[in-house]
Image (cartoon, rainbow, N blue to C red; front, side, top):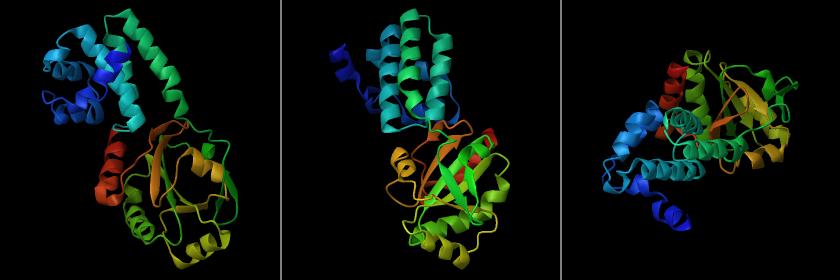
Length: 243
């Protein structure tokens, strides 16, 4: 299988016979396994249904590691895949993918304490909205301030579906304190990460601003959320509309 894996790695997104628009439409905007499989069949090497499904499974693993699509969409795709495939061997592969791949995209919501502006301690498990956006910023980050201003303005329109948690990752707590005094975002709750670098390391927070979408159970839906220039607000409204 090593030859198969190497040959068909990234095959789907690089095929000249498969339209990128069909991939995005059938995976990201409205998960549709059957329509996706039909579009893959336009490539002559994927005419055979067994090969087509195996190539799709191989590429789903690649897409997950490369974060080309949201994890939520890929998991829904795999569910449809499992329910529609005629091949028992492929169902076993899907089970293994779900077990070994997606289980690592989970954070323990009871593990990491955050500090509120009133110096109270809260945990992520206390937030029960279907989706939670973890927005990491620092007091010295000017783009963060601009984005927080915009997010603060639109938040009332989506807060029933998405909880936005603005988390300061300032190394010095006093900088966070002064930031909350200097800037006013009345629609947002501001939190301090409590110098918990394990949280930053687990979520791979290395630049600011950086945001991650999770669900209320701690499953990471999208670890590479766009910034505002690249469609963050539109993405949030789309998620809110779906929920």
